[in-house]
Image (cartoon, rainbow, N blue to C red):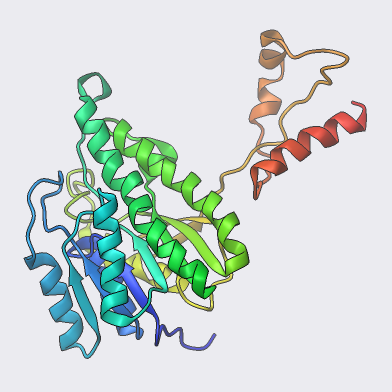
Length: 305
């Protein structure tokens, strides 16, 4: 394949003052994109603010010969999201790429989790992605081009103790991306989701004993650069990535069990008797839309079984 370049493209990376976001911003800039480096400059739990983190990354990009602009707004408000996208338009005239990366942690076992801890995490991860994506999507739709990457987590896909708020928000992003992909398809807007495994200040407490150099944030960014490039045909996909591995995460269904409701309605006992068949992953399918699920049932009904 020819060298993947992003020349002429304008990218916004949220939470780009460190960790994954910084690695994304640096690689996109190195590949020719003009980058808006957004970072509130706060702590891992979302408190505090400052300009230093975003400014340092902008300086790195410029010293390497790239173009970048800093933004310090919070993704957690609609006003902040619009201001982030406005920075791209005011600085570089357009937006082609949005990387929804900003995040915080408020870990606590569910029995000890407050409503404020739940709401704050969802406000940054899930609502924050909406706040940035809505103004960006409208501009992308008007120009019939856009690439959006959402950042989910293994916690959202598989679960993790003490992170019910984070897991709920992160899995919500998968549904957001998959639904938006269908709307954006006719406007050449691709939406994909990554579940990174990397050593950052957000994960260092969760990855104790793991060699940090083998799980560096820089190992995540090549997938991101591919997903936002014109070489990428994929949309509506979820990828687990880290430590040199990239894998497609399947969100699908087994062949399951079926009983015709006209002849024999399902009962709890029927479920118990068929649980092995329901759990069997042979013939696993990956629906591309919710209608695919409905069509599958209709076809079973029409088969007369």
